[in-house]
Length: 153
Figure 1 (tube, rainbow, N blue to C red):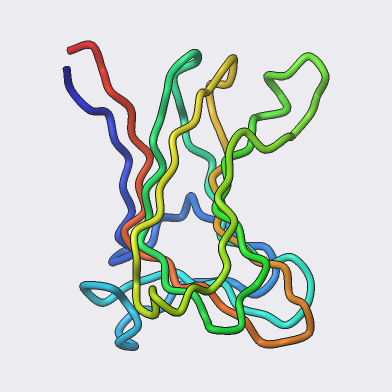
Figure 2 (figure 1 turned 90 degrees about the horizontal axis):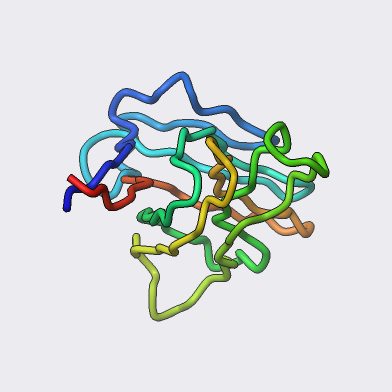
């Protein structure tokens, strides 16, 4: 068995990422888990996220893995995978799997987060890390994110 994996360490940010609200890349600011680059999401209001479409094999199990650092004020963050509505008969754009992100004082620095998901009929999925601003400044720092699956060879 092998592993098919797409990884991003944000040292040279990919053009495939896009942003919603307050989000972007940092380089050389000392905020990365390792190296010089990382991504971030930050705001006091609205939905804010870093997003990327990933190609996947249908009817497969994938793992999403990322190192995240959460602000002490974060109460409504998410690392999620959504389906591709173009491949859905009902044109839905629903969440396949997600992890809710809330600051945990036992994890004050970058910590690993991961989950598995089943692709179903999808041949691409939207992976995002984001937060809802609730009137208080909150942020998520993102580094070393990957999506992978076992292969039969």
